[in-house]
Amino acid sequence: MSTLFLRTLREDPADAELPGHKLLVRAGYIRRVAPGIYTWLPLGMQVLAKVENIVREEMVRIGSQEVKFPALLPREPYDATNRWTEYGDNLFRLKDRKDADMLLGPTHEEMFCLTVKDMYSSYKDLPLALFQIQNKYRDEARPRAGILRGREFIMKDSYSFDVDSAGLQKAYDAHREAYIRIFDRLGFEYVIVKADSGAMGGSASEEFLAVSPHGEDTFVRDDSGYAANVEAVEVPQAPEMAVTAGPAHVEPTPDTPTIDTLVAALNKDHPRADGRDWTAADTLKNVIVMLVHPDGTREPLAVGLPGDREVDTKRLEAKVAPAEVEAFEEKDFAAYPMLAKGYIGPGALGESTSSHIRYLLDPSVAIGSAWVTGADEHGHHVIDLVHGRDFTADGTIQAAEIREGDASPTGHGTLKLARGIEMGHIFQLGTKYAEALGLKVLDEHGKLVTVTMGSYGVGVTRAVGAIAEDNLDDAGLIWPRNVAPADVHVVATGKDEEVFVKAEEIVRELESAGVEVLFDDRRKVSPGVKFKDSELIGVPTILVVGKGLADGVVELKDRRSGERRDIPLAEVVAEVTAEIAQPARTL
Ligand code: ATP
Ligand code: MG
Image 1 (cartoon, protein in one colour):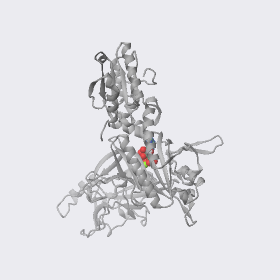
Image 2 (cartoon, rainbow, N blue to C red):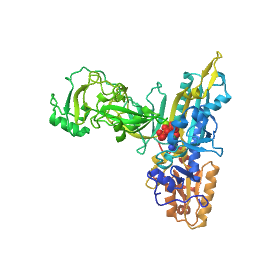
Image 3 (cartoon, rainbow, N blue to C red):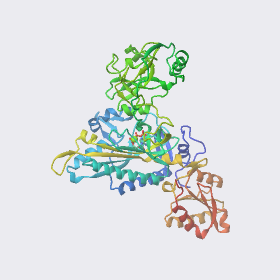
Image 4 (cartoon, protein in one colour):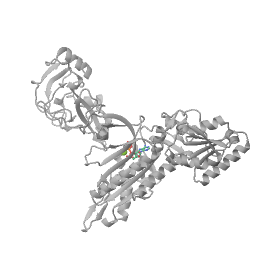
């Protein structure tokens, strides 16, 4: 450490919010260059290399071969798949000196697909799995939490190539197993969640989420082991019910543009015949948003859902992608005079009405159910408007918020909500990219077939961030053994040169036994500062060489439990190797 390029900080960096991020900066692992862009310092490089190697080993184990594509890429392949446009503002676009459009790769499906097309032409060449560990660039709208969401970051991305869907399923399953081994080895709690609505069938896409209160993804789970991203939860269609409501009737409801004011007015002026109070769940709320398609066209969309629920923006965005969702503004209302703001009802919505606005209902709105909803006239609502009898929609949409306690779609109990950080994503792409780029091979009958692909990603730099967030205390980081920058941190303390000579001897012995050592040999630094630094840096085992030497002992300290014990000098190597052989943490 007397020569290590390191300067630990006692103060938290001003621009860091999460505890792990603060500690990574303070302990000298990373340094910020610009929002979402970080420099890796020597200690950080050690951790990063270990994470990369775990990922690499598990990829190689399933027969995937390592390659490396450039990050700087031409535009054309991304035009062929429309991603030059679809990626929107997240794509870093640039021009070369000849004015040709270039990009910094956000992910590499196109490049892998084209290279395989260049080199292979027969079913005999497949199956094939390739991977790389490489820099990716995304101009994230909210780079946050340091390396958890960077604008330059390292991803392991792999791609599988098969002639048929059985082959793809096999490649997918192999990757799933590899990911389980990777995340077991990395040292954080994780769940595997269904990631898409299953439109492609089965488990076409799953995400590996690190369970963390700092996560940006919300996921649900039930007691049967089902887990899904909120975007992927499929609320079952409510079964058709017998109509019990009388004829629909429009009533004046002045000054009730919100659900709360409406419910209060209904209970005061229009009490229910059955004696119970009206609640927000009896109302049908119609929310209008503006979809912006990749080519720039704007299309309004109306979502009808029970008034006690909000539209979940992430769920909605997942359903309308690649279109983006914007607010329906005052000027948009001006273009649709049939919409009475605050009193919009199904009468003005739907492709066959005068507004032509596509109208999609939440699946909880059963055929036969009766609602209070807007009467399309300022200050008026309609009561007992029955779905299927008095109004219809253009379809359904899974865009309402999911709440803790909702019935699980599996039929097993209720849903619990938790937060996670997306660490990995496995995805059966199918023929989408191969078709767009013309990746075909001859099958055994000499017929051209389109190759089917899978795509699989792990956030390597993000993993370092997630491990840090999940392994720390007030004093600093506490690395899981598999990714720690060293096996043991030897701290020499004292004024006597003798101590440093002895400590160096111990370090040499440990190193020749294959132990990785971080050695604090700083002569002019106080023991207090050294202890603080050792806790901040977070090597899981700390060996203090100092006062005890007089009695022939050194102190072995466990960073996580704080437990310390003296061990005789003669047993240092045996004790330390035994210590590091056992897992530092059982999950
Ligand atoms: P997110 O939803 O968090 O933006 P994503 O779904 O866009 O991620 P993928 O395209 O599936 O991410 O990329 C594969 C993996 O790369 C992710 O599972 C994640 O671990 C990692 N990753 C994605 N974006 C970033 C980023 N900005 N910084 C660090 N790692 C990232
Ligand atoms: Mg993803």
